[in-house]
Image (cartoon, rainbow over all chains, first blue to last red):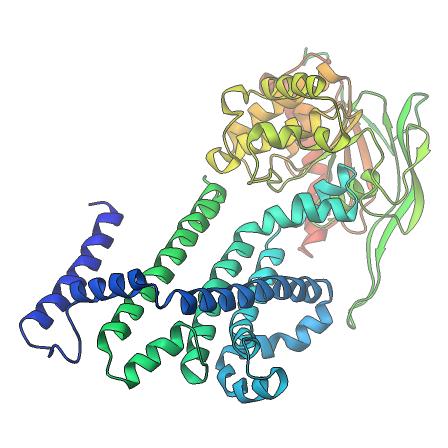
Length: 250
Length: 283
């Protein structure tokens, strides 16, 4: 049986079990509507257009956090790779970075940036940036030394070597960093909207929750879940293709 | 041919009138690092490569064979001494006309075989028509025509090494340095690759310096074989094989091949024991 079929069966089985649990009354309808109804709610919320502004705002904040994380994470990765002593000094900090709950800085960011989108972008950025740093370092570490020797034999300048050899050789790992940045930027921004924001998908889900508006809450949750999963799976497929092309045979 | 193949020895490589590469008094000393003492890896060493010859270097592990190749190529600077290629000093960078094939797989996994071979030419700005003709020739010469659109990951180790040779060949090197290029391949593939290299050598007229740990490979392929001592590596003998230019891997069944290989081993055994700090060294 092909892997994709097993994957589909797992997804539909989980979906079906939840559907049965909700329809048969094991889970009461007020706590959780059946997944099929959630999809209907999602469609209704989207079709009404009342959430379009929030969705666009969240995507805009996620996009900004993502771009900053990728660009700055990449540049920091390059700097650390070029400066091994600094790298040795900060390595333990990078390794323990994800133990830090970056959300505790939210009040600080509000003080610094004010009550606007920037504190959310900063949270998303902080959540994502280290994934890019680590994957940039990982990618550069894995470029075989013989490639650099080849570049020297072929008379490459240093910038040409970076552009034509280092970057393409490290590309699959850089792409992994980019993929993780998408996921972390989403988590950071949406979670930030939950805590303290006046608009955005996270805020609307929290608002619906506080007002017992299950239709909107589940509708938005399903939309967000499907959207992030589709984006991440598309990137995952692309990433696998990049790696598969390079995995050495015998 | 083998019966007439002579086995000559000389104390050092001699300076010939048609010297292609002249190495004079080079040493390579690695400075002390983190409390470890300096390492004298190579030399002092003299070597002259004649125009168009096939010269192999054998020696015990860690004797500085690859360091010698790096210095000749211009990939590493000698601590002392000079290297001249076609009369000009090699200093700081790899001169035009030198090609190197390394032991490690250096084919670029993100490029097809064709693009790997075309890589250096594109960087040199060679016009499209000339580029296509030269790449097609190199790809066909190395038996890769049917794999031109394949990626290296789809090829065997031997095929990937052919890609690296083709990528070097296409730049028309006048001096080809081979750093144990068949080291990772099985014995049969190595013999066949040896035939390919001999064919390449005859057709291009390039001078070849091969670094190898395989004595049979050195004995089969070379006009001369330089035998290095344990570290710091110096030439303790340079053997002339006396093989005719038209030769292939079938000479391994010749009597002279056995004599050459045997002579190489008798020279190297003591050095190899010394290199591993073994008993009976210099016994």
